[in-house]
Length: 130
Image (cartoon, rainbow, N blue to C red; front, side, top):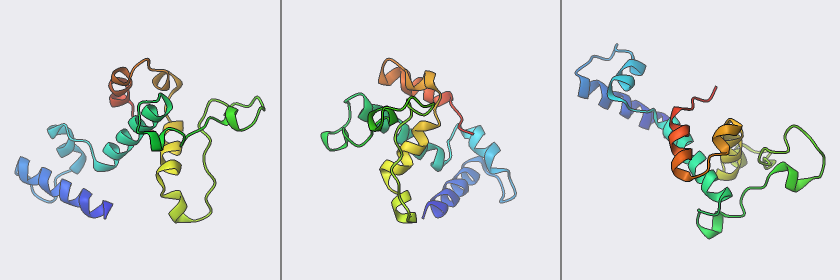
């Protein structure tokens, strides 16, 4: 389904810019200032995790995430990262908690330490994960 939506977005970009099927999709998105759908999903997931960690999310999501330092008392390099749930199946790895934890842990410490949701969104917009 994700693939089909991305193809549809690419087709819409070609129609808007009056380009043929051989046009580079990345250049089309850049010309229109559009983000790819996967980038938009990642962006929204990071915002929701930030809201959960700062008490701004709906009540049913507030206790979804824990830091590794809350799970154990060992002083490790990953103590300030979110604890990633363990799933052995692909369906478990597609859950919100697993994807959100994996995505949020990729962010720089400076981005995570943003003082407000507005500042977080502004800094996140310029972040490109590797």
